[in-house]
Length: 377
Ligand SMILES: [Zn+2]
Image (tube, rainbow, N blue to C red; front, side, top):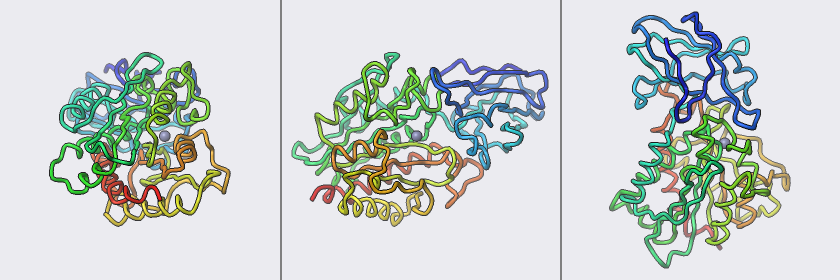
């Protein structure tokens, strides 16, 4: 048996592979940061039909140790179809097993969104979705951070921003963006036409390419949590945020959505700006309308489960959602998708996955279309 993780978003360390019934593994920390939780590795040289077991021995010390209860690891034979494998969190370790039908298998924390697919997605956006490359930032290690603009009406009054995967292990975020970009390719989509008659879209499909490539959970190459850097972004240690903030200030923001994944909560949910100093009834109305529309249209979404609401004036303003909502006095949400499943509509075979994330991206465009006329008074 050979285990490797020396590839895009790979992360594993082999401690002891002598017992194929329980191969002992550990997740690596993010560079310059104590965080870890993401894993992604390939196992080759398996005998199909034989049982193999794997143990992530340091799961109990990871960033969100509570997240492993009720979590099932994902696996794939072809890096296209990903399925859940029975997993158990016990004695601080996450154990999972497989009787493979192929000689090689990949395991990951969530269906990975590769850098190669990112390049393809940008190409699709430019050639088929009517997007232009509005600007391009650089990560610390020199990877491109594309800012796409979709502008079909030169008189459009509103600017809608969506950014994804500030937290690099949250690969569902770029799957969401792929769904959204795919929908932009449709012709004769009345909702889309109405939206783009009134608004330009600004899209950053991947905010943290260094972290994603390195198999990080939480931070960029300097060990910065980008979603805690929105009051202190600098070209030196958080150029990814610095770039997007500069662009936002040049363009303006009327609606902002920051796309994430949550390790613990098995539901899709949003977090809003209720703790911002500038939070007003207008924003409260817009937030509840946004949530209600998503529920009413039958999207995989709910409003019962989520983070504890901030007390008035107590928001952590270093988060993108709060920082942008406050600076631009606009509707701003963090959208959270689960690593586990959306328990309102569970699928034990796949759990929450790339395809479901894509559909949510498409559905959110419908909500934006319904609300674009009310974003400003
Ligand atoms: Zn996140």
